[in-house]
Image 1: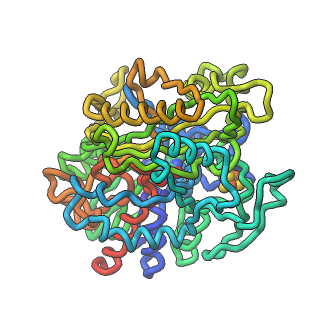
Image 2: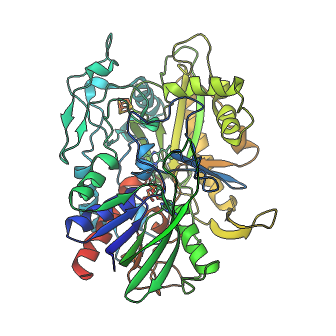
Image 3: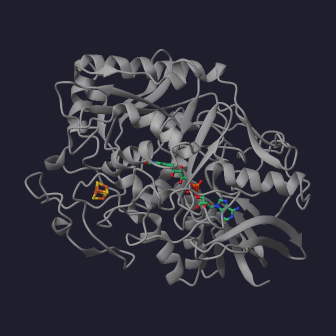
Length: 533
Ligand SMILES: Cc1cc2nc3c(=O)[nH]c(=O)nc-3n(C[C@H](O)[C@H](O)[C@H](O)COP(=O)(O)OP(=O)(O)OC[C@H]3O[C@@H](n4cnc5c(N)ncnc54)[C@H](O)[C@@H]3O)c2cc1C
Ligand code: SF4
């Protein structure tokens, strides 16, 4: 076998297992469909390459993929470093209660705690220093206090490096105010100057993303990371597996042909995200039939993690959602004290560039594209023309909650009958109470602080949701009757075939998931290190 371990995908699951197994001396290959980005190549203008398309990856290989289903749009990353390139940096533990039902008995909060701590240390997480509160943090605290729940407000841990001496004041956002430093993995970074662009890449490298810690550490220990490699099949062979992929042309402006290739390894770890891993394994089970014995549970118990956003307008208050880290704090109702539902409220933020981008889209040639329509519908009405910060008076009240985790992903013939596409059956009824509890709390908080909440008609009329936190599809379970992989991530029926990403999480967490995915990946790598030699 050419490699000990092939890992498919380089997000939280792939980067972390890859790093720990390379560190342990295994010969590791990470295959990633997306490209490697840095601050000199981040997309910035409307015409730049923002969006990933699995249909046309030769030319559309940007870093965000929007997967649109009948009742749900899922946003996810496509890059070396996966979702971390475009995420809002929140790194939080799930509450103990999240593990009470639906998990294999081996996986508990106490079991994961040391791994949570390892991820936090490696990604150097920290909260916004007390001398650097953003206007949204103040509004969150005011809102919690105004409704009598001030004690539920908390600052969140972020994978961002702050300079404790930085302060708001004239010229404070100038990149020259960012202090350069070398992180524990030997990578150059700078400190946060509250530019507000976290979700679209930080100009001063203050975000502690996977391409600045786990991935370089994996490479330092001999792991090979191949960008622009789209995996399409996994096939058992004597002593291991062959992984088949298409190499995508590296110059996206030129486009060109894909080149088919393959590599072999004794162990394969699928870490292509909730949708990516589930779709790849469904294709292997049902289309190529290379892995026909995968569990019938594949695709089941998918969750949107109860994500919801309600914008509120404040005529007398500057909220400045484009200043400072995208999300900073939470008001914690995970204890089911409100309407019997478990959720927490967060402040949201919009990159300043989003305003210019949406303005450009409204008048541009691509205004009719799906991506443009989604952004214009979501943000167009919030724009204010007379201000350097066009969203200045908008508070994006954000939240996650424990939904019913009852979605089913499967492959279905598309309308033209030409191919099988990923489809989501999503019955909203059982998840409605969780979303309605969030909406009602958003309204309460906004009204208690002088804001005017506007519940998006996509929810109030259509019950349509958008989530950046897809979970499940290849869930952990105790047997093929209730799961696809066991507590260690190994697929039922296939020795040395693992899944190690958001796809294995069997229930909604009700909080941002990356640290839990990371902790599970650390645990799977630790088990493999002791057992797989
Ligand atoms: C805008 C946004 C903001 C977010 N903010 C937060 C936050 O603040 N905190 C938080 O905890 N979470 C956040 N998330 C969610 C978080 O990014 C995901 O939960 C996390 O990245 C999932 O980790 P993963 O390892 O499962 O998959 P990913 O990180 O998505 O990595 C999967 C990788 O596999 C690659 N891949 C897929 N298919 C293939 C294939 N066939 N061949 C090769 N490679 C493939 C993908 O390109 C991707 O790079 C956010 C997400 C988005 C979109
Ligand atoms: S707020 Fe700005 S400087 Fe700070 S991490 Fe986010 S993008 Fe970087």
